[in-house]
Image 1 (cartoon, rainbow, N blue to C red):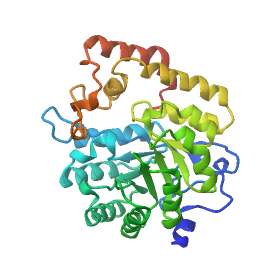
Image 2 (image 1 turned 45 degrees about the vertical axis):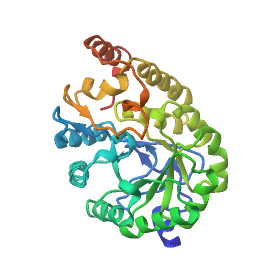
Image 3 (image 1 turned 180 degrees about the horizontal axis):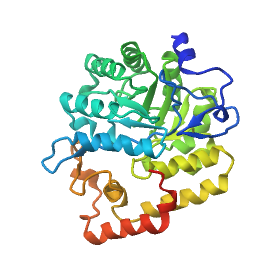
Image 4 (image 1 turned 90 degrees about the vertical axis):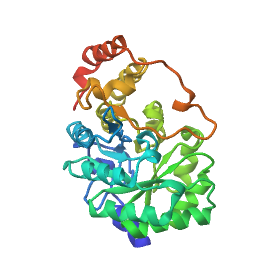
Length: 339
C-alpha cells in the first residue's frame, strides 16, 4: 500500500509553486499535494456537483455535461459527484451510471472525482462503482465514512474501495468521525489523500489533523465554501462548495497561494455578499446560463423524523429574486466570472 501513496504523491518535494492549479501557476510554502493518475493536481476548488433534472424529475444528462463544461471554462481544479448536495441517496444505479458517463465525456483540465458510497454502504455495490470510475478515467473517488463504523471497519471499507479502483481517495467525514479516526484511517489506507471535513468545526480540527498526519492528508471542507478564507489561513488545500461561483473561489485560491492575499480577501468578500441574497445559490447556475430555468435539483430524502427540505424554509423563489441575483452578477461579479 505504501507504493500507492508514492504513486499518488508526485515527489516528496513537490510544492504548489511547481503546479498549475486550474490552469494558473500558484505558490505555497512546501505543501505537498496529490496528483491523479491523469496528472491533475487534487487541490484547489472541488465543488460538489448538482444533479439537474427536467421538470418531470428525470435526470438531465445534457445539463450534467454542461455543468462539467462550465467548470472547465472556469479553470476550476476539480469536481466531485454525487455526494450529499447531489442527492446521491435518491439516485438509481442507472442514474449514477448515466451521470458519471455524462461528466466523464467532457474532456478538459477539471479533475473528476466520483462518489462511490451506496445505500447501506454495501461494499460490493460500491466496488462496482469504483470499477466504473476507473474505466471512465476518473481522477479519484470520494466516499462518506460508513455511519457508526469502527476504525477497523472503516479501514476495511476504504481498502476495498482502493483495491477496486486503484485511484486516489477523498474521505468525507460527517457526524462523529473524530480527528483520531481520520488519522488512523489515513495510516491504514495510503490511497487516501484528502478529507472533506464536515464533522464538528473543521476550523478547530484543522491544526490537530494536519499536525497528526504530517500534512500528508490534504484538508478540504464544505458548507458552501463560506469559511474558505479562514481555512486558507490554516493551511487547507481546497474546498468543496457548490458549483455556481466555483470559478470565483478558484481565483481566490490561486491569488492566495500566489501571495496576493488582500486580493483574495476582497474577492472572497464579493462571494459572501452574493451568497447573502435569498435563493442565490439555488438559482446562480440558471442565471449564468448553465442549467435551463426550469431545472429541478435532485435532493436526498429527509432523514427519518426530519421535515422535508432539511427544515429550513425560505419560501419560493420569485421573479424578483431572480432579477436581483442576475443584477448582482452583472453589477458586482461580472469582471471576476471566468466561466
